[in-house]
Image (tube, rainbow, N blue to C red; front, side, top):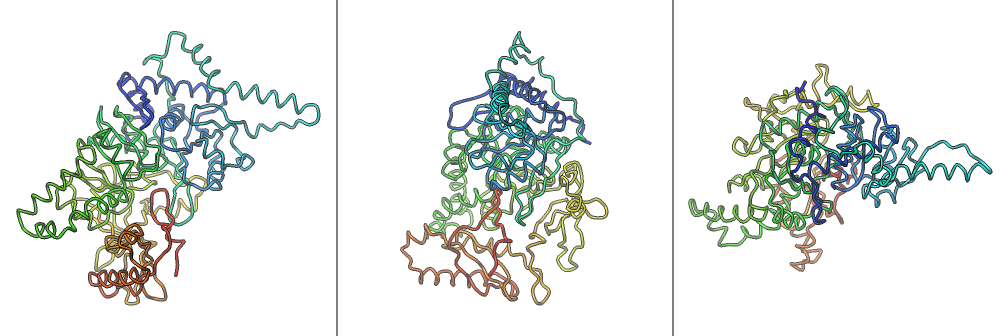
Length: 570
């Protein structure tokens, strides 16, 4: 058990960093000090009391990244309740299901999301609050059995009850409770051991089935304190928080660890396109950057590839010594574009494209690749930029263990299994799925295939569920083939599937590049055939693609930007 109590980590940070800037909504010119955050949490605690919320009751939360999202999360956990963060990209039917399945009593939501939800489908929610200003939007399931003349009276009573939950009334109660003002000494949070639940995170999943991951206070404290020990985050760091907060990766490091460390977090609520992010990086100048491969790969494709594709640059890159000068210039340009003051970039959430990784390593760019999953809240492995081994995803954490289950006698690859402080309790109200997630010795089965070296570095080959077995018994990892294809001309993204014993690549073209070159459909198909032959020249016989089939639009993805493979067949 991690010795630091999760709730005390928050309380200590608020006391220690009282006057320092804590949260800002990027582009909205508002900054909240840690004192402001603590006061707002205290107001929400009064609101929870008014709603008769008890310890370990569930509170659902859905909306874009924002200061109020973060404050709602912290208020829930420090009150002793259980937060249920819901990804804002989920379909309304999924939101209804998660709110009901988790038995959440309150719902905090962005106004735009609430417009698409149906009140009658929220069977457990008692009250709905706006993340804009914490106002009460509506009361639900109050079980009034009024009829006839009693209806108007009960409607009035419900309106009065709703008025008592509005910010003005909560502010009045706050003033009465703290007549001398709210100071550091007023911070009194729930006495809740790390063994109890802190959150239920419903996985976005690529298999179409969402499960509620039961995350304990200990799981979160394990990730946070690891961030301290490795100096991933430190007091005064500037953080650009653009990964979805309802996702375990962004939540753990952009938000929770950074809050406990006393960082200044800038929340980006807009869609994190490279254009939006580069502007934010230039202005905020982050001290460390947590990101996913998709963002880095887009920057590489749009900013670096055109540069190194120039004949003179290509020529120089093949000359020893001279190439280091060019690589140094590219590295400086990229570092400056990302703010110029970060210690390293931590890439996680999905595999990084092999070509991009190799080029970044070649130019000595300060990056590292980590590995995790929602079921580990999320971190499994990490190595800092100086210890990072190319093609690995870091070293198993010092509070975790790893083993390879049923390794292939030829390659040594098998299912990666882990256990330790970060591993979940199980899936909420789903004992069958929980039983399937662990092996007979209690190790969590990650579903990923890979190897581990003697130093504990993990190397991932692909997902067990996506691996294709060839007619000759060879293991084919489609992600590796896709990685090669995605760097080829006119390909935006690809998906390799099996059809009648052969490999087919579905390809969504880079239509911006196609249009800029004025390619006809016939010319585009010719380019794709060239790409197919080029990809096959780098592949073993059993990995060769027999056909590239053009796909008209982007593949449907989870909020983590993983393709929902189960939707696609030929």
